[in-house]
Image (cartoon, rainbow, N blue to C red; front, top):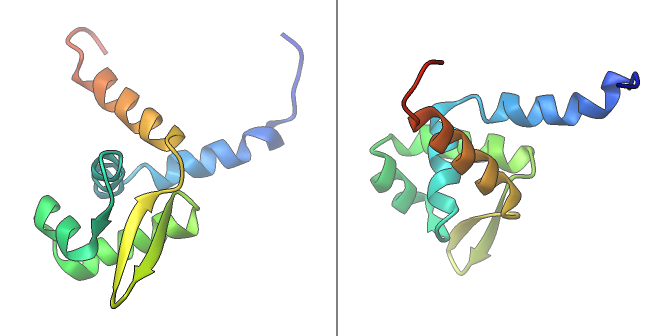
Length: 100
């Protein structure tokens, strides 16, 4: 295996740091299915609105989620399906039985 500078993996590490929060993983998992309004994410997660909004901001800043204004509300969606695949694969992996 040839030596490669770790610089190319910095963004990957940043992605995993963002996804290290169970709340953000839950939000990404929900958004993998469809678009949501904040109050719908609050209802689906059972968390307080300020907490959901804070996590959405982190996901937006990491360019994983986009918000589109529709009239007086903002609709949230994933920017692309890649992050949904990462999260869903991780969920499936951790749900598998067997030694760690």
